[in-house]
Each structure stands twice: as structure tokens, then as C-alpha cells.
Image 1 (cartoon, rainbow, N blue to C red):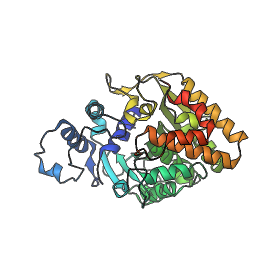
Image 2: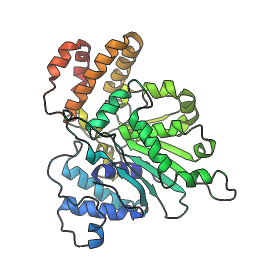
Image 3: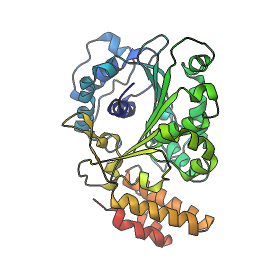
Image 4: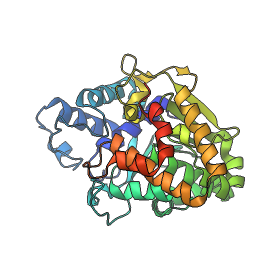
Length: 366
């Protein structure tokens, strides 16, 4: 079984791969190619070129607020985990290239970027599904819908992907065949990818043969939305002891979600960041000195405040007021994560919804 650090590394890698990966490619091949891209070395191995894993040069601009040097540190950390490097990738999908990343462009497609990672080609026992977080307009549109429904279009797409993936029938079949070792499934993702992993965990809880095989749901800088709690309360209760939520203590996202009994929450003491949004990048959880997760600490005052604020909103505000507030929050989050070109005026949002101003001291919190 992969460690939480190894799962985090895969959750970082999925942001870097450009396009779908052919079945059976080793993690080492993908990492080697990405290291060469970041370090600027020429590609001489034709077989690696043929993998079509994105051989365009890496520019100095940041990918999801993570610098080139930070990505290099993440990639080099893979070499500390030789077991992980020998795992193989299957069922890779990536529809994010079809969608615009600027919030002022119109989205046409639903987003999904995912792959499965296993320890061996035949009859694997350790099956890990990794899901990418929000990268495009479609993803942000779906995030907004998650405030009102658990079964968003992209969550449904994630379940469709899982059922069509290489190992779905194999895992279900193992529930009927006696005497064979039982495979274990881990669902994992960062941010919105963590929400996808959680959705698969709860919406498959009633499949008794499959549910027994779901070993873990490991979410990084993610959270359990109130709609999941209300829609899948029984399933969540059944699976809660297998759910692990790991977040930077100063990351705001987990503070805006529910706290569920029996779920294992871990808050990590990460390095200081200049912008609150930077506490949400996937690489923030990895200690560059050790190549492991940072040690645990207490949750931050900011996250605790956000939790209380959101519960006050949920319990005392009208539905119309909540919708206006959440739309305003989405504008601010898009601004903080630099995916808007500035045409949405943050000051106008705050004037229209004064309650958002209460959050400003916490949104500048360091």
C-alpha cells in the first residue's frame, strides 16, 4: 500500500502530465520525462518521446501557483520512493485541454483528469485512483454547483469514468471468486480531486462487493461539502473511518467544509507563504528537506473562523442571501488563484455583499 507521501506525489504529478498516458507505463518513465522537461535537458530516448506525455517546454510561469523550482523539488522527491517508481499507470484520461482556463471564456466540456496506479500488470492488489483538482472554467462552474447538489455533472462523470476503468470489473469479480487475494482500492485527490475521491467512496458504499475493497479515501487540501453530508449521510457514516483529510493548517478550503465524526483529519505545519491561496497548492504539504509530509500541528485560527462563519451562514441566512454570498466568494477565490483577467471587480463584489468584508482580515492572514 502506498504511503500518504507517495499519494501526495502522485497528486502533484497529475497536474504536470499533458495528455493521456498509455496503459502500462511506469511512474518512473513519466517522472524521468518530466524531470528532463524541467531541467531543460534534451530528450534522446525515442521511446520516451513516443509516450506523448507533453514534450512542450516548461516556461517560467507558475502552474497552479507552484514555481518551477518547487515542481523540480517534487519530481526529485519521487526518487526517494523506489517502490512507487515501479508502479504502473492505467486508465488515464484528460479532458482539461479542451476547456479554457480563463474564467471569462465560455466552457464547453465537463472536466476530468485522472489515472489509476497499480503495483503490477496482472491481478494487482493495490489499486490507486488519482484525480486532478480544478484547472479550467468548467471545473469552477461545477464547484459552484456543489454548493447546491452532491451529484454535480463532474461528480457523475467521475463515477462513469470509474465504472469504465480497467479495474472496475476485476474488483467486482473478486467479490464472487473464492480463494483469491482481495485487491484494495484507494481514491485520492487534491482540492476538487479530493471531492471526486470522496464522491466515489460514498456513492459506491452500497455495492457490498465493491465497498469491502475500498480501503481508503485520502483527500489533500479538500473537504466534505454539506451537500455530501445531507445526501449521503448513511453512506458517509458507513465509510467515514476510511476517509483521511490532510491539509495545510492555514489553507482556507478545509475550513469552509464539514467536520464529520470518525474521519481522520490531519493539519500540517507548512512553510510560510506570501499569499493565502498558496497554502492550497499541492506541493505545499511536502517538506523539501525530507521529501516527506510536514509534521502535524493544530488547525489554524483562520480555518476555525471560516468554519464558524460558514455554519452561521448555513443556519441563519436565507437561500437567496447564501447564493449571493457564495457567488461573491467564488469571485474572490478565482481572483486569489489568478485565473481571472481582472474584469470582475473585487471591490464591487464586497460593496454588493458587505458580509464578505468580514472575511478580509482572514483572507490576508499569514
